[in-house]
Length: 414
Ligand SMILES: C[S@@+](CC[C@H](N)C(=O)[O-])C[C@H]1O[C@@H](n2cnc3c(N)ncnc32)[C@H](O)[C@@H]1O
Image (cartoon, rainbow, N blue to C red; front, side, top):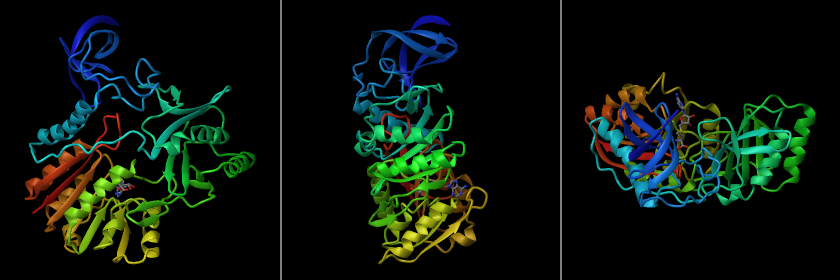
């Protein structure tokens, strides 16, 4: 370890300050561009010991768990940056990724997120002799910071943290950590635990009794199996009610989902036959089915079943068909793509490389690409642009407040 004084030049993709050292970049978490800081350095990582020049963009973090003045909760990395530069940083993640692939389309302003919007959280849990730790891993560590507040999460989750902690404690087997995904649905909280050892019959009964004694829990599942379900969890996709499978994918905020859906629907316009690829439980497919015939393709059986069931139950939708398919290994081929006028695709972080190569050979005129990873989005858009598609706009959307993650919706046509 060595100590030195550095000036921060810019923010890196993870939201860390970057100083230019003699041997390359030095990454300094919680330091901002323009700040001069004394750091303790190990390799290319610096820890701030003191600050002699403070950036005017620095603000007081709203959460007691944040940063070195808190307990280094790893849930957020950018609470110390003022709104405007924070929003510019997020937009630049998209602009820079596109630029690196030679693309300079019209990138709109970031659609911002507000505190209290997150309806989905993935907690780390561990039961110790003294207490149940429920929170997020400390930055770059396995230590769980047991949270008492969280400004990004919805009041429906934060207001029930103690209840969730009690329930998590009743599920824990030994001292091994596990993951607990909590989604606030219209009918109550949907809790899905993963990575837990099998419960004894007695422990299962305790979990069921605990849930039934509490208010506001819709369902508890463990390793994908429903343990107790006082209410079916329900989500609303543009007026269509869906019961998602345990632990299934859900957009993290309703607000971001709504913006993404509006952009996609407006672009797809009057197209009559629409393909939704990586469809999940139907976030886009079910909304689009109000105006078009939709074929939804997805790799997760249970998500697709939820989509199908919601489509059958809802009056007034155009026909919706579903197909379970691994789109990485078996993308839809140009011959199959002939049947559609428009496509929306919303892949996981790895992107949709195989599928975009086939879309590039198709005659489909209208494409909406939704992405949570600007790097793979840029790679996939490059393929489409090279085959004659024009990017009309790219809209960055903040769904993960104060993290370095950003969503984007790219609209293309040819
Ligand atoms: C980012 S989510 C989007 C889901 C949906 N569009 C939504 O907005 O709720 C990505 C989806 O891709 C699915 N998926 C992941 N890998 C896949 C694959 N190889 N083939 C098909 N679907 C896949 C996941 O199950 C997940 O539902």
